[in-house]
Length: 253
Length: 54
Image (cartoon, rainbow over all chains, first blue to last red; front, side, top):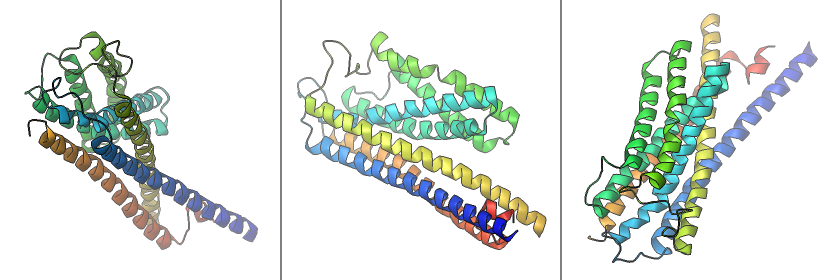
């Protein structure tokens, strides 16, 4: 009996140690991602060369792409997590699937808002108008961000039951179709939004220094997304554990 | 400001606010939950879920 108690105590300490270890990694990745994103910004403003002022109405504003593009890709990754999580819950009733769905929706909203706010500000400077209702890329991305907003608000407003999870998961599954449409829209129906800068044909491409800063920005946001996904996942686990312990406290007292 | 510097600054301030605010919220939530969990566990006299089975 005593031996069993000592073993369990050791296992408990090990679980605590693991929990703290994962938390430390998540916080470290998040802070590293933020630091690298800040370095991207600094490089974008000081090291990346300017563009030809004759080709652009607001040449300095092009530097928005150093965070705008990585934020857009981060949001696409978040929507992919949302899709995988929604599928795992809807088809297999897997609890981690639902947690992934929640994480994907929240991160999709955060990075989607970054894109949907910074884009029109740049558009106002460059195009003279913040939005163009005839541009497919702008509209599909706006719907995609609205979808994540709907999910985040729905998660907070609705009771957490299997039925509501099914409803939100089906939205996450079918909404994902907008991701490939949004990505290919600037290749098929390019109107006002700039075309692809990588693999976009003869007229596309970037100055090597600008491309290097952009790739560094994409890498920075990858680290940031990894850290934030881990953090949000840990929060879900802590909330579950707290609910469980509070239930035990209620029965005891 | 015809070069778009002001618009650029506004856009970056907005993005920094969103990402920074969200990260701050996550870290604060982790801290709050950890504190509450520690308090609840110490009330029950356990270190983690496994030791409670004693």
